[in-house]
Image (cartoon, rainbow, N blue to C red; front, side, top):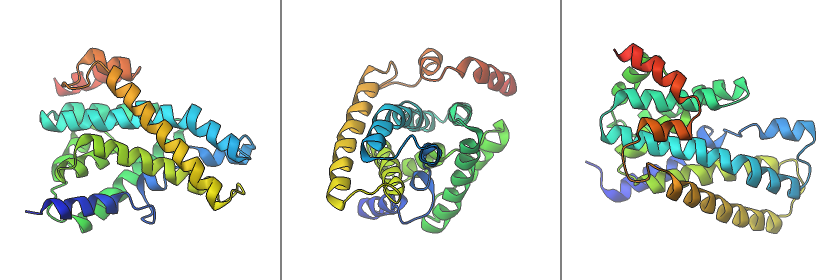
Length: 234
């Protein structure tokens, strides 16, 4: 059995931006905005991050990780698949959905090498049984749950890694000094944490197993996918 220090070290490895996968090369459509010219300056980038990326990250990816943790605790394989599918269908445009599927698979492959003691076969069986995808937040949550990383640390680590990756990628094109970049990252980090605290504390399932009602309020597509998976399970 690994000790706490080793598990935390493994968690940090998953968040290392030099490892080319995950929330870590998952840029949430920022390239499209830059190519279209809607993000040209540091001010444009900050506005995009605050107004578009942060709410999406928190409401979709952050809450999905929380839902996966709850489902694992309750050994509810159906709900793991449901949350995974909801994340997949909420992602637009379609190329982002395919990217998420690919990065999830890459994360499993890497983690098998980093954590050979983690059994991924139950997770892969869930994907096969319910025809779900294996999105990045699902795989990330599964790994960190097995590393005994608290759910809040897992969520905030994921959110901050994704935010840092997007800013770093944008700054390859936008001419910002190192000082200005660090100041921007500090402001965005505070904003992202406040966004998570706000959503998490107002969520109806903050400290309980997600109910159908609370999941539907978080994901508008719940009633369609939920019905389909209920029928499959029956």
